[in-house]
Amino acid sequence: MLIAVRLFWLTLEAAVAHFHDGLAFPVLLLAALIAWRRWRPYWMLPVIVAEAVYASDLFAHATGGGKLPGAMSNVFFQIGVFTLLALVGYVLGRLVPNRKS
Image (cartoon, rainbow, N blue to C red; front, side, top):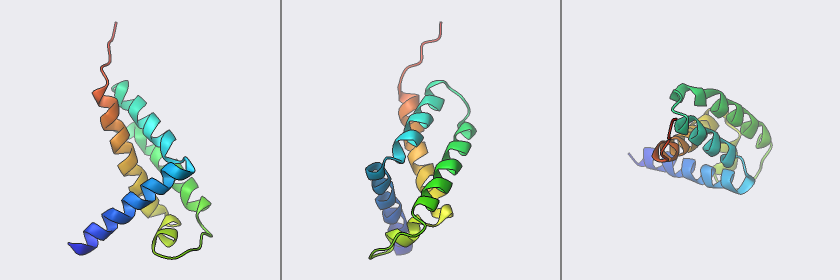
């Protein structure tokens, strides 16, 4: 249980770091757009994978204290982080009313 809480907390720290470096915004906006247009959720997969590969390459040689710099270079961890961000964007996009003419 403690490991799951620590992993979730590490994921939240990485998401906050992506807000600081600007990588979280395209995923949030595209996921919200996909939800607002009422497209299927699997349309988010290319966005998630592309951002995760780019972010893991960006942080490939990051150094520092703690577990976050090492985790940021792992592409599978980044896929989890961007999946969380995309789900938040998708929920926010579904909340906005879509009026079809």
